[in-house]
Image (tube, rainbow, N blue to C red):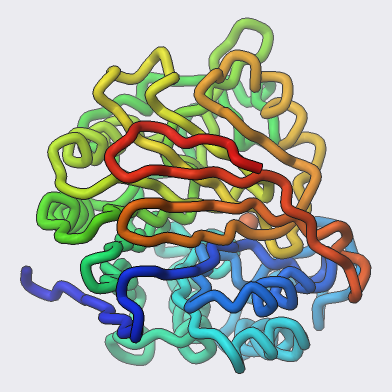
Length: 381
Ligand SMILES: [Fe+2]
């Protein structure tokens, strides 16, 4: 396909692989000690699903950014990245393990309006200068093609999605904001959500994804999305809410992708982040999805960014309405370790006991086994 970007990762033993998914490292919220434990696990690579830097501390200053103001100019974004690059655990991880990185909302401005275009341009250039990525078109570019298919022989293909640059308007469902929760992120459902051409990925990336899912040649046909993909039902005072930053705010685009997954070869699986908490989701137990949707998702926690009560409480209180959520932990920061071969995929949720302690230990919170060709997963630890 024209312009398709492939990453061929070579490995001596092509029939097994170990990697990590993580995201969301706020320097002000704690040490990045999670990387120390990732290194002990010796993964082949780290898949970082975004929020590599944070624009703000949200008032929690366990340690301080170089300035309290959010970066605006190229120089300010460079200084923010430079600070993060001084973090010892992050430095050590980069020295030892390859990273695949993707942008999320705190790395760069997601809107492409005339007011924000200069800031977005600065953010992209600084991100490019500090990340192990290629393909930045030219200095001052305002779009940067980042989605890619990470192909590990015939073992797995990981479609790493860019869900920030090409999405439709985020500022919808704002007529009844007093009923919203989670700092305004969980908003009462509105008609605009269901517009036919509403998109998370944009037309070109959606077509690319559908084609890559259907042409998958690997045992495991994986989508890696910065934000959570499968539905989560949120209700408050009998009003249905939607998390406006997630795929729940882009249902038509998601259904198009689910339809493609259902007729694609290979065992499908979704990996994501953004929620600063751990989730394991089995879509076949979701009463609102079609029975054919045999899709699972592992949502990884954050390296250090906190999961404050205004966000976590609505999630917790709605868990009982979501029987597809088989596991949830909002207490711990950390990462998912994935160990796979052609027949099995084992995902382990690893929680750092305290991001405020440089010597913090990590604890296994849960372990899941996926068997190729069988729906769902088993909790084995
Ligand atoms: Fe985040």
